[in-house]
Image (cartoon, rainbow, N blue to C red; front, side, top):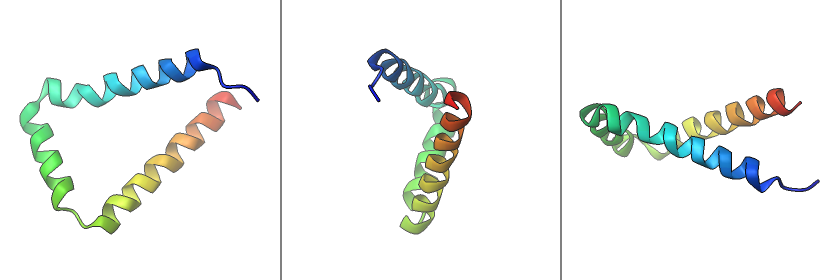
Length: 65
């Protein structure tokens, strides 16, 4: 198995675009969201992170099949 650096770079670029959308469109909502995350317990943040990783791996599996 070889790494396709072009696909990896494309995925990273898309990630950065998606991550930047909320702060660009609504800085107030982004600030509220970041404050809510900062005040959340570590366990809750870990659960959300795990769910996000599982969703990402599942999506990758379905797309790349």
